[in-house]
Amino acid sequence: GAGVSQSPRYKVAKRGQDVALRCDPISGHVSLFWYQQALGQGPEFLTYFQNEAQLDKSGLPSDRFFAERPEGSVSTLKIQRTQQEDSAVYLCASETSGGDYEQYFGPGTRLTVT
Amino acid sequence: GENVEQHPSTLSVQEGDSAVIKCTYSDSASNYFPWYKQELGKGPQLIIDIRSNVGEKKDQRIAVTLNKTAKHFSLHITETQPEDSAVYFCAASRGTYKYIFGTGTRLKVLA
Image (tube, rainbow over all chains, first blue to last red; front, side, top):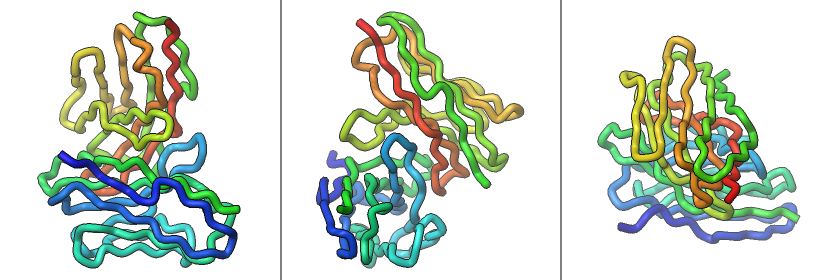
């Protein structure tokens, strides 16, 4: 079956521009996570949704970062007024509701801020 | 705060040899420990996991061990092959909750 998909795969933004990154989770997966992966590092948690409810946004680095999942399926991560330090790969993962705890990751969006 | 340490950062082995990667976690409430393989330009792929009520799990050439008392868990790959070359990440979690990832191990299998 289809896995987690993300778009765009690559995004180049000039400093100060707003960007929107999309995640399509595996159909039926209740939980959705966003992570940020800097070059040569492990993924770091940004935010977590259960259906449409954002249950944890403690990892969002600043108020320029905003995520939503209005209908409990597709999610969008928005970054306003991008800065060079926002350059990273943004990963989305989804998980079933069956208590397996297994998160399935998408290919990521590589954001480069120039 | 919550932390996962991973060692070594790089590991080179001859084809056919074994590779071992070790992780230590700090959050006593962690009860789920997945391992991911990440190839260049791709997202992390789950290769094996272990839960806190189990001490060891094996899947063909891959095994994971967990020592809850010491808060250590390890990945063992036997009979390594060139296609095992990738970056491997360990993670710890409290279940349906965020993962805390290690910093990664770049494994090179030399033919």
